[in-house]
Image (cartoon, rainbow, N blue to C red):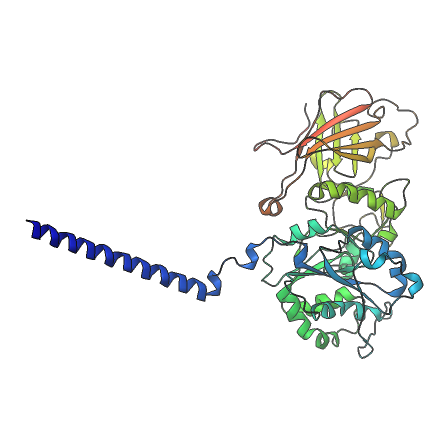
Length: 466
């Protein structure tokens, strides 16, 4: 009996040992497969979120414009976090350079000679070829760990964190050409609805940029008749078989003149990424210079970059008012109810880039009411402060009113206080955004109105209360 037990024990021990050896062999085999196959290595680069470090900027400028426009670039450039170069036709005189410029601006790069390329467009300037080749010269710098090459003009201001988040929606290992059209239909008809207008910014994924750089010069010789740099980039990308990926929030080309309030107050339901043609519009805040007004906007962006200019609409139950909040910029209070679709379009406070055609725009607009007293009362951002753990309180003060006979509410209001939590946009919200809801708080009395912005409930509707 003891002998049988010993045999059974020995057999069981042998089987257990054999099983252990098989499991160990299988584990080692899988480990070798995973380490030898690059598709199973961990982690893959595209699993790491896209940050400012993964972007490289090529900014087009020239010696004359850079003297004044570098003040715009100082507003958004982050020397320790960002990489890029400003391409100029020649270097500035030492007298034009402040000792602090090197610390607060991207380095200057002198563009290569482009005299070998023909330029036959009578309405333009041969510098368009030099500016187009910023793409090639930027890529040829061959910097490490670049996912996206971003291009713009020296009168473009970027919102870098929003730019990185917007591009993170896309797989940077694929070929992407990301940008947007002009706001003016005439500009789109002239240059193409499939072209990213380059001044306000466009982005190329790294593999596409490298492929384009290899063929760019040979391609340029076929397009001497084109007007600008963006047209040349678009044409060469078309030859590679790549079309534009439209990103409505990627930039505001600002092909408008005068007061851009209506355009800013009705920004798309996308993160604000860039603004262009700053020299051609009025300062975006009243009673400020252009640079000071942009600095004021960036103060809001530093507090909650994701939410900047995002529009929420709420309805006052007590007074039957409609309130439109463009966070970090302005609040409009209409003294009557508006259906939501009527409250969202941009008011035409601006003029078209060319001519006076009121139907010149490629987005929804509405004309301001002919009676000044039927127009909304406008409150511009004044200050911001923290409110709770992640909360923000932004205060908006009333702008000058030109309605002389109607001093009834809402014109009696002097200040609007808006409470919100910092917006944390993830990939899902970036891909499928939803407008936030807002409530007029019961504490609103007299000359002060208080508003709370929040996420809408699952089946909640934004509508006026009858």
